[in-house]
Length: 233
Image (cartoon, rainbow, N blue to C red; front, top):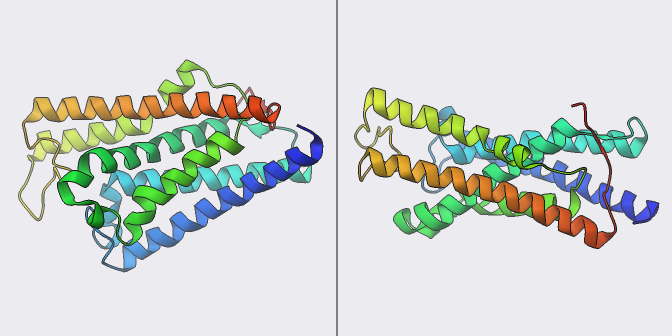
């Protein structure tokens, strides 16, 4: 890839990262201050209990960091993209992929796709994950991703799962409308809930592996890497 084409690709990458950040910020504020955002949403900061919201906020923050890092690269203030930023983008994209797939395969059939894709949920359950996945695959390849890196990328999912299951173990599933098991993972018992959680972890890891492999393939097809990362980060 020649210098001009590389800069154009980096500019598109910067613009999409900035767009993701703005979309996430705007629709998070809508969820906080407005109702009618579909199933698995509430009003105010109580929305922060949902992995959907947390994963999208993670993606928004990672995209802002990436946009800043790429902007510095384009302006000549740095020669490399921070590896920490790059791997954070991988983790964030894997996390919103988990949101997309869990809604598509598990929650959608239970609560109805129309409700799951209404209001801000349309963006957080569908559009932001798709944009984030495609942006990482086709525009971001700033170094090799190891198997260990893909495993680390699901740490946020593990942390969320520990708090989610732990809260149910301590306080019980609860009753509607104040259920602690608001995703319904333990409706069929804790063994099934643990199995569902393990399956979600595998989905997250598979997403990270797919992101890594597809990004590498796209980079090779376009003629090489778009930039190097600082391996010391």
